[in-house]
Length: 362
Image 1: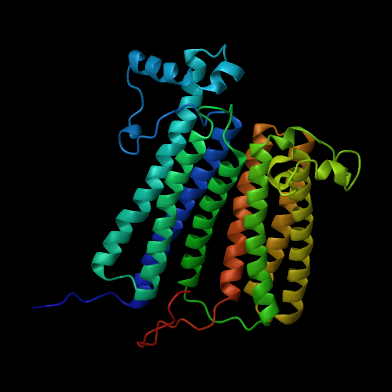
Image 2: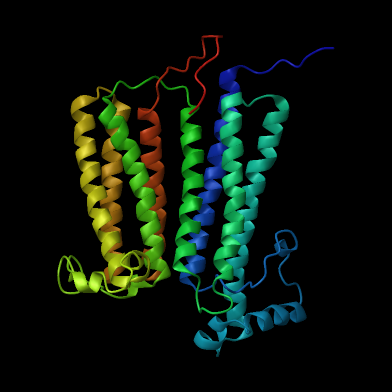
């Protein structure tokens, strides 16, 4: 029986990288549309979870009226938008429908090529485990999305900030895992760097995920619509402790006190910018590699720009254009942080000339 010859390992890895970057790009679009869905208060317009049949939107006037009637039963309509017309409803429905459709497309764009690569034997054993784990995270993300929506259908006029923050952060974690994996498959040489620089690069990427989580809490509490001054917040740089820790037990303030949530988001932004600047200087002094130096400088500039954009978004009380730009730039910064950390974390040279087994992605 004849066996099918596999392409060269570099060819296989190049194909997998192209696929992963394509999925990552689709996730970016999904995240931006998801941000627009939240900002336009569209996320609760579809009150049912139909993973398969939900792909088909209403196709008749009767179907549209039926969907609108379902929306009228939830608190958001009754308490916030009782004067909404069917035409208004269609606008918010299309935002949510588009977000859900994109999420389904991401799942299909990941799973179908993945199965094909497995069938062809393109995927190395260590990489196979990582990709299945990413797929599992993505599948869980769909369930978390409905869990988030369900929180706003009975007793609230919007979704839980806890669930919103978890949903967005998990989506960004899936995105970061895909970017990390794609970058680690690239045939790049090892970068000689002190361990502290490698660790600080990873810490900055993790810090960005934390900042995205805090930003989602700000969005879920509508905390960006208050305390619209900078650099002072509530009249001072550091608000009064009694107001920051108003709720009991104290930890609830981190998630439920709008002042505390916005203050935490500001402070972490300062720490990230200063940390990125210190990291960039450290890389320039200690690492003799142009890509690493450029990566550190680009990351510091992106985080500084992201903070400046966040300040503008706050001062102008979260207009949708600035808010979407702020979210999009956060994704760009996260991409740069993950690529930079992945390059610094490389511990072996990938060579297309050597026929021996090469390092498995980690």
